Image (cartoon, rainbow over all chains, first blue to last red; front, top):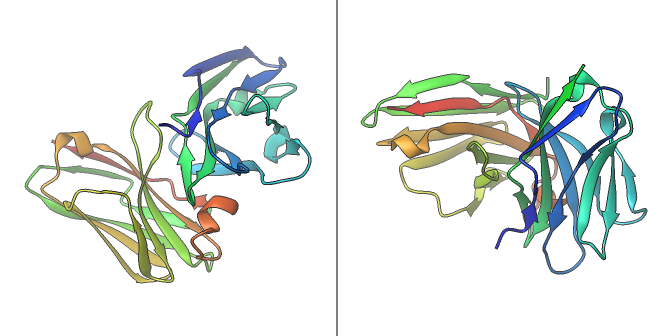
Amino acid sequence: AQSVAQPEDQVNVAEGNPLTVKCTYSVSGNPYLFWYVQYPNRGLQFLLKYITGDNLVKGSYGFEAEFNKSQTSFHLKKPSALVSDSALYFCAVRDDYKLSFGAGTTVTVRA
Amino acid sequence: ETGVTQTPRHLVMGMTNKKSLKCEQHLGHNAMYWYKQSAKKPLELMFVYNFKEQTENNSVPSRFSPECPNSSHLFLHLHTLQPEDSALYLCASSQSGTPDSATNEKLFFGSGTQLSVL
């Protein structure tokens, strides 16, 4: 069974609007959760992680993510999207001492 | 620039060829990884090396053969590949090299080698 799911292949938003990229997970024990971003022709870059502590995690480039234990979710958010945020976003979760990635969500921010 | 360099950026090979992918990291990390990225599929972990020792082989076919001569260099030797092996192959590294390091530290990725098998 897949440990992490990204239910949307694509998310399209207008510049200046809020951006949300959804992620749900399924692991036993306390989850370690990550978001990575991949810009065109580049490798993945770390955005943020949740290990413990505050449910709202702040990361790079103005992104944040909210850990919700009851809904087993870790959605990525940005209050005001930029065209330069257009990229492929991956959610990942620690699963039995391995890092399992989702299939990715392509974000397109239109001017 | 992430400090992880992969060469070549693009590779086209026939099913009978032998080629190698190279990865080098200048971060002083102790763990290195190979991942396979196919469109619309989760990233697949292939191999993990900690302090030059292979600690993970995620049921990868033997036509893929990794080599880690030192903590800074990682190779993926390819032979008799299949068209379904066409993908982006990503190398990554992380700091501590413990079995836990991939799961509580951030990974630094290279830009990948786009492989096409004809």
